[in-house]
Length: 244
Length: 224
Image: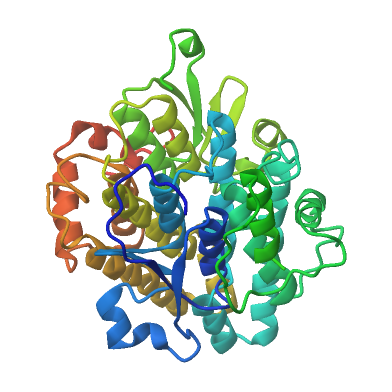
């Protein structure tokens, strides 16, 4: 198992409350698997409103997914969960050592979690559909995604290697992969459209998975502890598995 | 990873707009750490963020943007983390892992749960597609929902400020949000006792007073 530099809060396995289609939860699952952390997956059906169930609210008063339970500690919000995991289980690191590259990772994550995802979640899409119509909703989401991808493209074009900010998988990749996955599969965004300018992002995602494989929503998350001895190979293997 | 004297030869530059709550957060971080910087205004209402000269410096065309020599960083969260990592004193995150997570959660609730739903572009869009009343209802709903989440998160924390007796990341995000909501949308924080208590505590700090939007060089003169 992954060696933690900090005292663990107990023998209890981590619990992840998640919804299969949530891109926020998808980010966390990648982090857990990259670090080889075993956890119990507990589904919460957002479409059925299970996040408002009293039992769930007792565990997580915020009523949101993803939520991570580590003994007595409950953490909601994907960014906070990922940072907590990276600080508690430092290997492999989700941030590079270089200050500027760390900033690029924070920027990429922020563009996704504050610039794109809030404009495609159920709250606003239902509002627009109800107050205006369905076509307007689609146009709104598509515009938000394309605007965000254009910003990401500008940000990453100078830094991308095999992955978004170099040759290792870092924080930016955890936010990019689910966002791109969702854009393609839920909102039918064409990554190759000329007005998306998504060459870097598209190359990034295609460079990470073989051409013949499609990026699919994750339905079930088996434990992703690699049997290979090489940690680097294990990281890439886990990343590939999680977006296939 | 603290800075050296060599790196401080060129002053940091902050491109900002007086009323931007995102710019407000960064100014607080700079003030708390005692970092000198040059304030360069970018008037968002006049569309100055699209000026070719600004885009050359910051291709993202957004504020705030921090220029540190050849390095340009946009996005308030990324800027604040960069500042905290480069200039570690005083730290903007506590040592305890859970309290650090609380700070990240607060920052995230504000920057992804509230601010995106109250920014200029979105509220103009809503008003254009629906009407003025819907816009106001939308803003009220987004802010109150966010404040409710923040209150639940912080109610058991105790301490003078959001997550204890020191100013941390969470406080930087809270100040900008609460202040901005009061001034721009007349939404008070009174119904949320923990948030209200924090905000009262912030008012006692001179560094916070200096960073208020109305005191920035590009703020319009107050009307008498």
